[in-house]
Image (cartoon, rainbow, N blue to C red; front, top):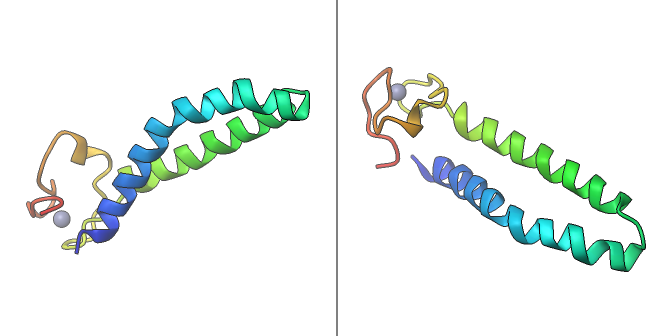
Length: 89
Ligand SMILES: [Zn+2]
């Protein structure tokens, strides 16, 4: 029931914590390979778009019990604000 929710949450956490090593790669590695920062800018923008999309998917996740969007309230509460089912249990 909550497998997809957990998958989205894990993807968001991996993207959030993966930004630092990816940023190092963009700032130090790619300019050496390509001789320019342009590929780094393009990949940084693509990463930010994927991160924003994943963030929205997680925040707007629909409760599997009642179908209402959590709208970010799962960060503060452990139960669905509409039907009261415990989130991720
Ligand atoms: Zn609900």
